Length: 576
Image (cartoon, rainbow, N blue to C red):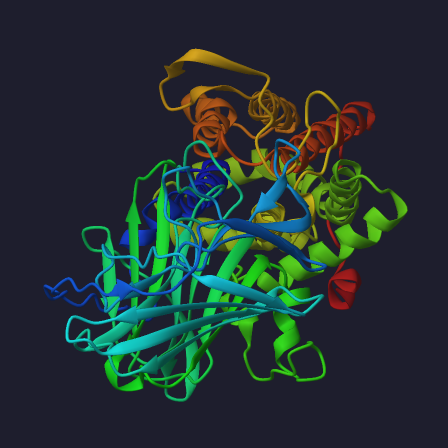
């Protein structure tokens, strides 16, 4: 196998590894709820619970009312002392509607319902009386048990004017509540917004649930693994969360009681997919007021990181470390941070994220230009030596050791480094981490939500640009037509064709080059077809710049005088 073919196969191997990693990234999230995290969460068996009921003796009436803060527009319902809607001011979905943190269908349960015991089929749906006092909404209802004992449930929502964190407290007064091991359960259901018509649970749109598990004094974020669409655990945990790509809801018990039971469930209600979580309070704690902090808002460190110090949030809370609940970056998170910083700097000058991505891509190409130029110069030198290397192989056909020694001497005589042939491979390895980091950044960068690049075509850089929807599915692609993936294939193929023209190395078989030129781009087309348009803006720009660069290098090579190598003198060798 000659050296040129070895280099091609190494580059092919790098490309295949890239394809595998990107395929893994995009597919692992489709199985997110079935895969264990690095700290596996144990699924515990559920016990049959006896349904209990209590006679409501309160005077509440079924009605809804609104409540506002600087961050929320909330619709409360007195039935169950629950929340019908919790819109996040300042954030809109793809239809231009304000994002509702509580995504539900008409017949679905409302958020923050209570359940007696830990029976999730038995929600408390009685009408509560309520009172609004400043930043608090207090619901009250009275109950009588079968033995005549009475108790009162007081459920309080407390907000701060400019904070995505709020508090839900439950207080049981009286002695009639008796539900066995667990007194009651507080739930968040049926789904965190924004709304969706279908949920593919891939890398671009998903819902995942996590636990913040205590492990040797530290909190480890662990993905919840469902069994038969259910999950239950009593492991000591700091929080439980439901996370989308850009928004999340986190529940943090105020007292961090290690005896709480955490549960999660997935089902199909009036919406395509519901993902809910539950916190069950032990019976011995029923008479003590219990508080639960909830964060509902954007998945941004600028908000989630405000709970380390009591001076950074209106609650005076410290040590919550809610940013631990965020979706973590890749192993190249440090490179993502650098690219993100550069993107934000460019955006301040050019307030369009599409153009900012293009400018950053040009900047990266400028940085790698010298390596590409050096790669071409090295290839030219090695090509000029090819006839002499062939003579050595013919002279010593059965002595590989002698061949290597003579070729090494040939390199030294003409002042060429044997490692220069690895420059194309080095370029591939340099571009690979940038590709992965850009993939992670542009797929999760919050500011790309709703960011328009070209009106009427690329209206949102955080989702695929769709120019048409077919009444049927195309195998492996679906029924939506995206233009950018095909532009990506075209620019990649164009770059490869120009690269082939620049190569004067013989011995590379056409099938190998055909696969590199056509097979790899087409394979990536299927893997990345539904990627956000912001990613393809980068890839298409990268492809166009690569083709332009290779065209310029080819023209320089074509117009340059034939390369004449001269032997390096002894004195020059000593100075190298």
